[in-house]
Structures are given as structure tokens and as C-alpha cells.
Amino acid sequence: MIKNIMIVGVGGQGTLLTSRIIGKTAMEMGYDVKISEVHGMAQRGGSVVTFVRFGESVSEPVVEEGQADVIIAFERLEALRYAHFLKKDGVLVVNDCRIDPMTVVIGAKEYPENIIEGLKAEHRVYTIDGQKIALELGNSKVLNSVVLGFAAEFIGFERETWNNIIASTVPTKTIDINQKAFACGFDAEH
Image (cartoon, rainbow, N blue to C red; front, side, top):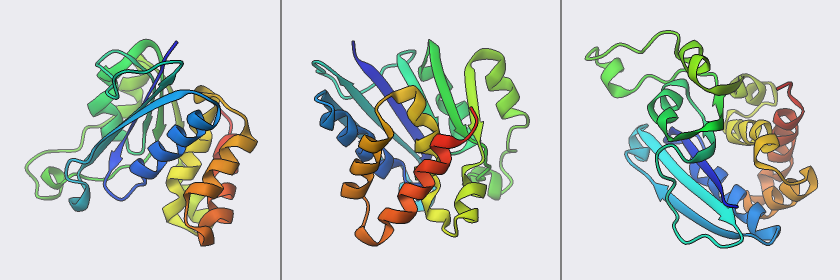
């Protein structure tokens, strides 16, 4: 069986690092892993999408529409934009925050209302305010570790394995804060 994970967000939210941590964790557990990164306009705050697929044998790195077991969305609108990739019994983990895309900033479009409610009407959705937790920890840059910790329940693997991979992946000076952030997400009520 192959597990299909999709990570979506806005440039600068840690989408790429999160996909690398998931991929390395799955490899540590002996799985064949394929990762595909679609950067988009990451440098300008645009949409960033990554796919992580793992199992006994994985041939393709890209998750097709309707096939994602788990979608991790670091922003509400990104969750809405990519929800069609979720399989019927899949899980959508959403960091409940709003980042206005450039079209909204310049007034060309309006940010949709009631995104979470609309997604919950059609999918299994779990939300967390990762930004609030990251700020409480004193570092907004660990948002991705908070949300990854929250999503870990739906991906699998033991907390110790996740912590070891975080320690070997993030910059040395940020290991402690990233592990704390992961623990806060992992322990948050689902």
C-alpha cells in the first residue's frame, strides 16, 4: 500500500522542509519514498505544493487528483485550492490562518468567506492555529513543525522517530524549538 501526502502552503511557510522531514522519516522506517516539489511563485508569497509518496515500491512522485490520503495545508485558501486532490476517506489538516494572495491585496478578488466550514461539509477536516502556537513558543518560523506534529497522527510513525529526523534535518541551532513545536502540535487535541 502506498501512502500519498500532499503539503500545500504559501512561500516561506516551510512547505519544502516539511516534505523533506516526512520523506526522511518514511525512509528511516524502510519505505521507498518519492518526493516532488512544485515551487510556483514561492519567492513572492505564491502557492507552493509538494508531494510525498511512500510504500514498499513507489514509481511515481506525483499524487493524482482524488488520491491524497492526507493533505497538510498551511493556509485556508490553499486548503480550498487543493482539496480536490483528497481521496474520499482522506484527511485534510488545515492551519487555520489567512494570507491574502496578491489578487486580494490589489483588490482584484475577494478572499472567500467560510472556507473551513465549506471544506468540513465535504471532507474530514482537522484544524489547528499553528501560528498562535508558534508565536507562543517565541518563533513564528516553527509554524510548519507545529502543523506537522498535528498531522503526524494521520501519517503514522512514532514520536521518537519524528524527533530524530527533525534533529537531523533542521539547522542545529533550531533543533530544540522545532522539536518543541512538533510536540505542541502532536499533543494538540484533534
